[in-house]
Amino acid sequence: MSALVCRKTGRRYPVDQPIWKSDADGLLDLEFQPRFELDRIRTRLPTMWRYREALPIGRDEHIVSFGEGFTPLVPINWNGREVLLKLEYLFPSGSYKDRGASVLISRARELGVTQVVEDSSGNAGAAIAAYSARAGITCEVYVPESTSPAKLAQIAAYGATVRGVRGSREEAASAAWQAAQSLYYASHVWNPYFFHGTKTFAFEVVEQLGWRPPDVVVIPTGNGTLLYGAYLGFCELRDAGVIERLPRLIGVQAANCAPLCHAWQGGGASIAEIVATETVAEGIAIARPARAQQCLEAVRATGGWFVTVSEDEIVGALRAIHHRGIYCEPTSATALAALDKFEVSGAIVTPITGHGLKTAEKAGAAMSR
Ligand SMILES: *Cc1c(COP(=O)(O)O)cnc(C)c1O
Image: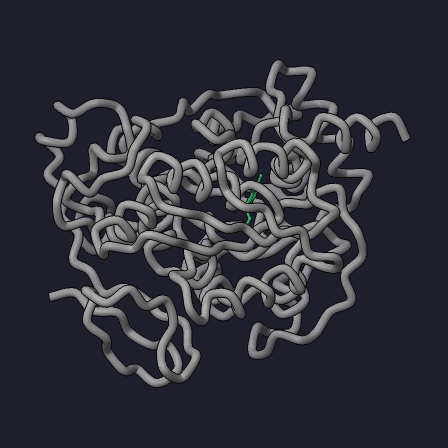
């Protein structure tokens, strides 16, 4: 049977309790046995819920969904190389965070939760707010006041309470942590169910490639909710015998805020405090990622690595991808900028993580500088 397992102490907790951390304040991972019945999957609607037996929700009537997922995988020529772009900005709330929100809020509903709290630089908050609205769950989101205005407006529009926090992303997170002492924390970082949503990214890529893994996946990384989710998904497919090997995962960070890259270069044993400065890639500006150790382990296990990209490189890649007809936010362009920094062969997949309409003002300003 499944259990929630503390990463600090190994203590196991039953899954029918609405908890999001252990008694030792440790991160929880979900122990869960997925199943993949390819013949059934093929007959289902093209949504992330087609992998139903691999998603940790007990009963169908608890599923909170807008029919999301199965985003297109589109080839482009990027400076002489073919790259497959997975159009993750085409989700109901405008980013891949809907994958995590759909599973997490479904599970919250299944557990009888009526009120959740979240903290976010924008997109996770919007996703949790949207799915909470659909589920009839009351939602409160702590955000740094510097968040793009369109993201704040979107969260409020879903009916969630927006709590602006003066200060950094970390200060917003600790305000939410405080509030979560008495509420269910629908955190895209702490709550393990979120990763069981983002893992469907890997399922879709593998199915879209004819049930074969790509060779390389290049992912913008702050807290690693897509990086680690993708790793989890590829591992589940490998352990079930659907694929034989894992793709290399390459985590991309903005040079102005790159704690995982620093730790990687230092051998990955410890996560040092870094001094972060502002970056146009607001979606991955995370100075202290709570699941850093897991991200480092995931990248190492796949034979991948971390890279940084400068502000100029991000803005250059953003301009170039816009000119190809893809209107994404600057954070998404980090992965494209990174592609120019290494030679790899084989099938390369890059997610386009967030919609440009959310950051039109900030991105416009950055590009005109
Ligand atoms: C959340 C997000 C990412 C990845 O961020 P993590 O902190 O690693 O989860 C990338 N791009 C966009 C647009 C995002 O919203």
